[in-house]
Length: 290
Image 1 (cartoon, rainbow, N blue to C red):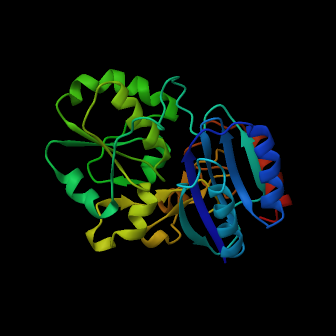
Image 2: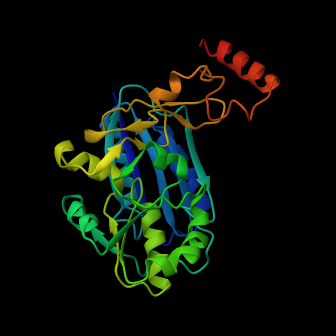
């Protein structure tokens, strides 16, 4: 059984390249796999290890960095390795919005605990916005949530500019998978002069972990960026698989479509790929033993 940790923290991180090399060595020595992103604004990532001790060592190590004592993380489990290898990457932002001046270390929206989330989003003066990408929303979302239809988080500011007038006078509640995108999106809205902005503390993953299914307003599953593809209530493995051609989630219904061929195609990409592409995917699948 693998312990999976989704983590992030916004704090000044000088000398990120040197931190990267040391972190690679630390994780490799403990059999930790997954992806960690370092930038001058902090750290973000999801990692896993065959056992909980290595993950706890990593969390303790990261919390020992100056300014990182409050690092947040969410734990779940996977029966098989959810990643193939370890990657520690350097980027400009730990979650890319592409808007200079948006700094969650300053002002962000009001955090709302999972136990209080249902009451907030059920209020008539609240608009609930899903800040995730369209393919994630298709797997599952909160009942009645607005889907901006974005394909990338960096599109969110433009969506807001086009829709802000329609939402004037409303309280805004926002959510994402683990909370990090809302740190930036609520910071962005606060900078736009929106005072009553809230976001789900710990994201959908924390909500699914803590809120009983019979009380839940979540519909469907939650897409995750690893080999589990999606999880449900209690963070149990979901029913979606990943199309190896387009890297998009495939629902049980779509798997019954003739266009779905494991490792080769799905209904969403069948028209976008050539016969040569599919032949290449088929050979890759054969080599992988599929």
